[in-house]
Structures are given as structure tokens and as C-alpha cells.
Image 1 (cartoon, helix red, strand yellow):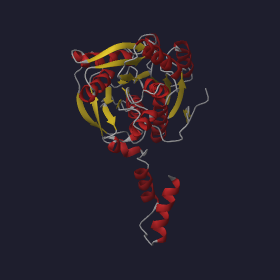
Image 2 (tube, helix red, strand yellow; image 1 turned 60 degrees about the vertical axis):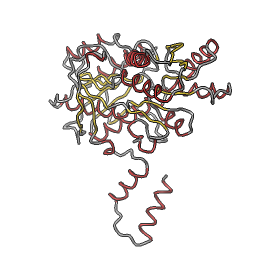
Image 3 (tube, one colour; image 1 turned 120 degrees about the vertical axis):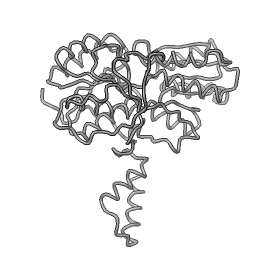
Image 4 (cartoon, one colour; image 1 turned 90 degrees about the vertical axis):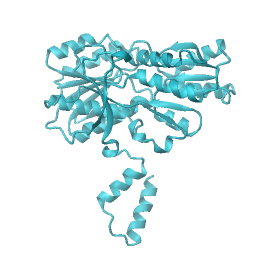
Length: 376
């Protein structure tokens, strides 16, 4: 890509085109990299609903679509702790990138901790306590469990510290704001796609993710509800952590019992594992793979016709929004207490129009754990 940019720059300079300057070159970089530039996602259509809607039950969801414009800068260098479940897959790598990039843009301080997996509640709690004790102004939390960090949220609430719930959904009534797509929508949308494109009747192996956090339960509910009464049968539901080995074992075990599966639908890691397993079994032509959320691996697999389609909750946008929202709250603006981007289905036909920076980190990005870190 850099060679290509140099070639373009050469064309402008050598051919006597004198309009190119730093800003023009910046715009060229944005355009030709399918843009990881700050402005490529703005203005953004988001769902907005009141914070007291502390549920993902569809009957209780009353929301509206609004246009959101990001903050330009923070008024001071706020100290923000972030706790995420892990960095074992490219979904959370995109979150990591977007958190860091937005913190840099706003000029705040940030410290990021990753627990190591959905089984690592104790580790997450220790990391949160240590970071918040260092003088942080607020916490962005992607909890590994729906309920078991509620006491910490309540503690920080009592201390006047802000807590923004990011992506995973936590049941505490003491959060300051929430940036989390309703994973019920992810389940519904990927089920709708399956209903439209699948051969019927069909048998599905469904892997919603780990038990504990709120998003798999919500996704499971939406997926099941949408397929109820159809000719598509969920023959087995396999719950488990989103590590590759665990998902691989779940799929292999299920295929031993249900060898006539038509589709494997699940997490991004489930999809990655499924691709490898069905290739080894020479079943790539007979078993279709879909994911109900998105990662860079999913993106590549759709390009290669290894995954039929995936729903994206635009996790990079959610990460950016969480940084924006906690800064707004710290600076007295409570206009947005619960927002989330709209779920989008991506397949081979829609890939060219998909803004990848909403869901994928730039190629070559490696985890970064702080911006303008503080000493304590």
C-alpha cells in the first residue's frame, strides 16, 4: 500500500500537478486504505434509548435512530481505565485499536487491561481495582460476566466515578452509560439471512459463545426466536469460551453426533474453527458457515468464499463511542446515555460497500495498552 501511495505521489509531482500538499496526500491515504481515518464513520446513524431500559428484552426496547457526531477534543487529560475480556481474536483487537485511536484524538489518558478470557473473572476484577485505585476518573468496562462485577460498579458509583458499559452488557443499575449493540439484533439478522438464502429444510449447529456475559444470551434468544416455526432446525447448541481450541472441540464433538449438519452458525472464532474442520473433512461444499458478529478473519473469509455472511455490530465504532461518551459525561454532557450502531449484514455482494474500519483494525496493528499513561 505504501508503494502504491508513493507511485501516486510521484504521478502528481513528476507530471507537474502542483495541487498536492499534505492535506491532499492525507485524503488520498484515507481513500485508498478503505480509510482508518478519524472522519470516515461520521456522521453515524445510531440507536439511542434511555438508560433506564436496563434490558435486552425486545418488548422493552424503545429506541430511536439519531445521527451522532463525535467530539473534537476533550477539555482536559482525563484518566480512563478500560477493562476488556481478552485479545485472543481480531474482534477485540479492533476494539483495542479504536479505543487507543479515539483516546489519542481526544487528547485523554488511557490504560487498557485484558483479563485473558471469559473464564478469568478474578483476573478482571483485580485489574479493575488496581487501575481505578491509581487515580482514574472513570472506567470503560466490557465485563466477562453479566452480574459478577456489579459490586465494583456500585462501589465506583458511590465514589462518584463513572462507569460506561461497553459491548458485553452488564446488569448493574449503577452504570453511567451504555454503548452496546443489542445482540438480540445480531441473532435476528443472521437468522433472517439464513432464512432467505438457505436450502430448506436445513439442520444448523449453533455456537452462541460463552455462558456468563449478556451478549451470547441475547444473541441466542434472537436467533432462536427468528427461526422458530421455520424449516431450519437448530439440532444442537454448543456453549463455550471464544478460544479457538474450545470452539474447535465443540464443533468436532457436535459433528460426530450430527454428521449431516447443513450450516454452522456462531461466533467469529466458531466460524474460523469451522472453516478448518470442514476443509479437513472435505465438507466445504456441503456445510455453510456464518458468523453472527465480525472480525478481520471473518472479513478475509468472506472474500475467499469460506464464510457465507456475517453480522457486524461495528465493534470499533462502539469502542470509539464509549470513549466519547465517558468524556462527555465527565464534562457535564449527559445527552447520550445509551447508544449503539445499527447491525449490518456483510456478504460477498455487499463487501465492496462495507466500511471495514467500523469493525476491523488496520493491517499490522498490534495491541497497545496505554495512551499518555500516568505514574500511579
